[in-house]
Length: 230
Ligand code: DC
Image 1 (cartoon, helix red, strand yellow):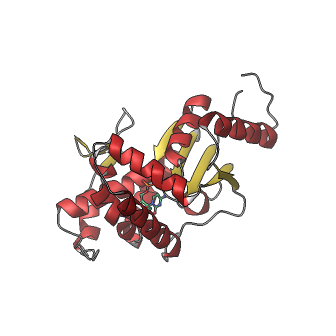
Image 2 (tube, rainbow, N blue to C red):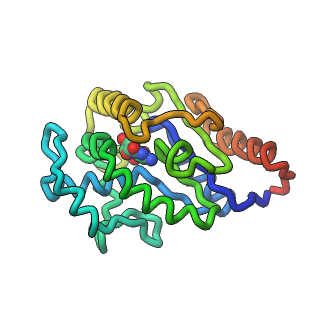
């Protein structure tokens, strides 16, 4: 199936499997995958290392100035870098997860990330996942998906991901972090997490990857009038 040069925007709550799904969709259709949350995580790691965020989540105004020269980007290997340093594993830690939502609520941080994300939009053929891709970053994306899953399923996925990265978290801390992030992400003033009116909802609580891929393939065929030649 030859998919046109579109932007596929995938939004939803934390740990709904957005990035696994987005990566597979990109591989299936020959698109570039971009994880917008990784940039927010990178800024959070930077703020922590430079002591620009307190334990109580107060962000120092110095961060705005520092962002002018901060180089967080995706390498050709698809991993996240801060300058020459690969930060892919560090940005997935529970410490970064615990402070990324307050950082992502700061308007100038969102402006910094949006600018980087929109550069990729020029060419199309991208799958980007996040919280505000279909509503704010690419409101004209030709295909928008909003992902959901039950809290139980999401907490288990997040827990497994942390364990796979070498952490030993308590399940209740993982649940607490998910709830806090959901709340902050959907209640912040700038670009809160919302389902765009023209987004298609995918609840994958009881779906496996093959079913999810079949679902999007059907959606694309229907929307763009394509024949299945795969
Ligand atoms: O998808 P993730 O869990 O890696 O995202 C990390 C945080 O970044 C999440 O708590 C909210 C924020 N985020 C955002 O506000 N907007 C996006 N487009 C992507 C992520």
